[in-house]
Image: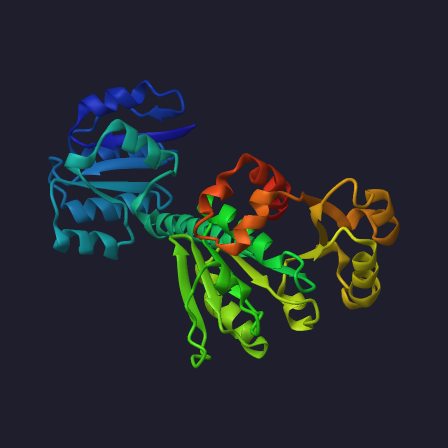
Amino acid sequence: MKQILTAMNNPKINEQLQKEKSIKVIGKDIPYKEGILEILEKNKNINYIFISEKLDGEIDFLDLLKKIKNINNKIKLIIILNKKNNILENKIKKININNIYYKNKINKKLLINIINNNLTINKKNKIFKIKKEKINLLKKKINNKIIKKENNKKIILITGGNKIGKTTITLILAYYLSQEKYKTAIIDCNFKNLDLTKAIKIKKNSENRELQEYKINDKLFLFYNIKINFLNNVVNKIKKNFDYIIIENNINNKEIIKIADYIFFIIKPEIKNIKEVYFKYIKNFYNKKEKLFIIINNFENNKISLKIISKIFNQKMIKYKIKYNLIYKKIKNDFYKNKKILNNKYLKKEFKKILLKIKNN
């Protein structure tokens, strides 16, 4: 139990402190300087003395502090000044006393905190360090969120042969992501055909071979006129500004496969096409099978059985099948005219699994 002596010209606080069980208050609030020295001669176990500069007595205030330290240098002296006094404070600090407070700030709670070492002036650096640590911790949390957000940015490759449905699936997927407030970029790497620009009815300038950007809506943008050699540069340039980047390209580019987080390989539900895709491309071309997913486009139960497809592909790779539907077929012909169609319950249901896969990983 810590023993304290008060000489603050404040008997009321002294009485309040005496009710505390964790400390022992020696006597009443001492009203004069010499009284402190008398008690110290008898009691060597006092831990704290709270002293006001306005105590009565013949001894000079600074001399009193020096005498206390000579009697017992282990005692912690807490000085209470009536008001700000830089000259006196500097003199007090020169005799290695740094715990200085002002009368208008003194209350029972503060004194208890001082006694329990929760708050003292000489702890200022420590308190500052704690605050600094908290700030650094907060910054770290913010940075982790930013990093996490950066890690959540996904690059999706929609690929497959010609006339297989890549453009339609790309547009639907990108539109649904943008409707869920994800900022999404479509990159059209099909430099010869530019099917995406045709679907969105962009009037392209055949002479302009530079990278072009087109705003479809507030959350959805199309980038086109991109040469394969410059794809990485384009992706690195825009990825900070987008949550998702969807690249539409044919199946024979290793550089795109490397940067993609997901590869959605579109196939027709025809045995000839499936065998060609598997033996020509997937078996030898794709190393990381864990990021490869097969989408069977225009799937109909009476065309081909999933069991037959399973014998050709690994069962785990057959994830999604999109059924043939006239509504779905219309979208590619004119994306703008048929944007309302994209709110169709049938299409949303068909693409729900794909969206969940992308967002939850």
